[in-house]
Length: 236
Image: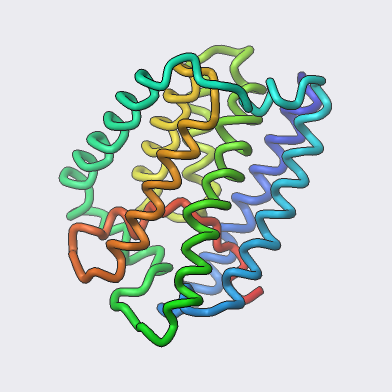
């Protein structure tokens, strides 16, 4: 398991380095990023590359479905309750740290207002962020990453993948929120032995973020900041 762990760790480190490099050299992405069709296409290509890398690494240990956590949850009831807990936890974190860190100002991915003429492109990007992003990110961190780290301890895997998830987004002020969200999803994975519930929670979170982003409600700041989308190649 050392070789796949080294490969996964190297990939996450490289991605994190690229994320922060682009963040500090290119600045914030344009406000209309999600109103562009090119964003959806570029993101799909990016996720396809990530999926291919994760697929390749996950095959080294042997049982790919086991490594990725692609199995029925041990309890949907437990998954539901933990999912509610994650939502409540993120709300409380927003109340405590949101006014201090203002993570929404840092990422700047989602628009502040609704533009009907770009509705189709926004929906297309929404599908990428609320469907493809949660699937690929959960397989990357709570699937492959968790399985590779779990042999060294359950909590190491939970915290390690959560922190890695937060760092991979290349943000500073939003990092505590992203890491907390990642840790919550990893805890969910550890309790139900499956990535499927995490995909659902992650997808719902992103979908709510995208909807709230254009509603003009200031309470959507944390959702906009933690939508969980890797737009490392905004000008792809």
